[in-house]
Each structure stands twice: as C-alpha cells, then as structure tokens.
Image (tube, rainbow, N blue to C red; front, side, top):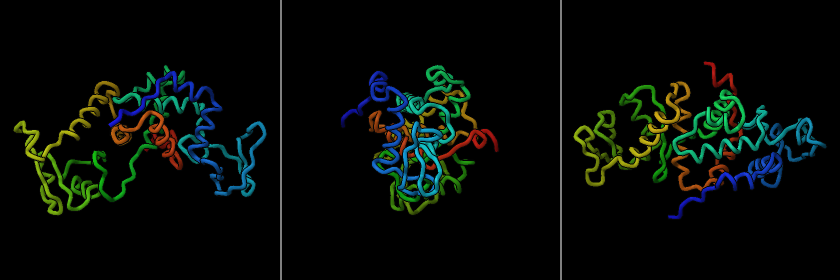
Length: 266
C-alpha cells in the first residue's frame, strides 16, 4: 500500500498563495463547472463587478451570494485562505491541535480559533445511517450511559445482521443472537483469542486518549461528540493524502451551519 502523499507547508502556500486562489478552489469544489444559486437553485447567474457586496447575483431571485453562502463558511469574516490553513493543520496533526497554537499561527484570537475548529469538526460529523461500516472504518459516538440497551441499539444501527462481533467481556454485549460473537478477556490480560481481538479499535482509542491528555486536556460533555468525530474522520481518511483530505472536508461543508450562539448556549 502506497504511503499517502503529504503536502508540505511550503507546497501548501505555493498552491494557495493568496485569497483569490483560495476562492477559486472553494468554488471549484462546490460548483465544478456550473454555479447554482444557493437561495433558489437557479443557474441564471451574473458575476458582480468588483464582487461587491458579493461576487454573484441570481437573475431569478435577485439575491446576492458567494461560495460561503449556505455552508459552514457563511457569515465568517476570516479569509478563505485561513480556512484552508486550519483544515491543513487539522489533518497534519494526528493527535489534534490546540486552539491556542492555531490562534498564534493564524494571527487571530483563541476564541475565534476555537469557534473555527468546532465548525470544521461539525462538518465532519458522521451521518447516522443504517448499514454496515466498511473494513477498518470507525463509527464512534458518545452515549449517555454504558447500559446494554443503549450499547446494543448503537451496534444494531451500524453493524449488519450476521456480522461477527469481537468485543471485550463487558456484559452489555450479551444478548444479540443476530451476530456471531467472540470475546477476549481484558481483565485476564487476554487480548487475542483465535480470530477474536480488539487491537484495531484499541489503537484508535489510544490515539484519542493521547489527544485528550496531551493536546486538548479537557473535552466538555457538550462538545465531546465533535472531538470524537474529529478522530474518527481522521482515522477513516488515513489513506488520503493531504489534498484529498482537504477536498473531502470542503465537500462536507455544504448545508452545514453552526453559529456561535448554538455552540455556546443550550
């Protein structure tokens, strides 16, 4: 298996040297060859002189819009080049990157950096769709309590009937006859028993824990699901190079909004 191509910081700035290059990149990822009005869906679009108040105007609904409209980027004043820088930093830091460091490198406040990172994590949130996960794919979620009812419901949501479950000896996994079930006894220092092992998922949890203790130090209950999904998304795209990772992130930003009020209240 070939090693994913890593983009150096020098090459990153060669590819995105200014705000115009960043804008054209975002537009290509969102619209490819044909721009569509995010307000009404019309393809009858006019480019606005000097791009003020926004670069484009819909001839049908007459509303102005930009590549930010209707996405995670909406109402953000941060340059698009800096948005790409944040995504770049969040993919190259396997254990995560603190908002204090992000703020220093971007020349913004820690509060702005934290909000920015949370909006990107929001775009990475997994769709909770029925069906089996692919080989090696992690589907991690925060559960209210480690009860059998909640754990088994989560398993049935993500695992195809007839699959083989390999777990530790926790009693919550007992009582799902629709799956073949193999266990390893961690309490007895057993980590492999024939085909049964939990090594792959244990390595995922180990990396998340290192991020928790070494980088973030604290993850509040309210925002824990975003941090968990950050590590899940990074794990599931480990075979991607830097640019494909950035592409995948930007494509997930459509129709994803997270306001500061939503983030800090409730």
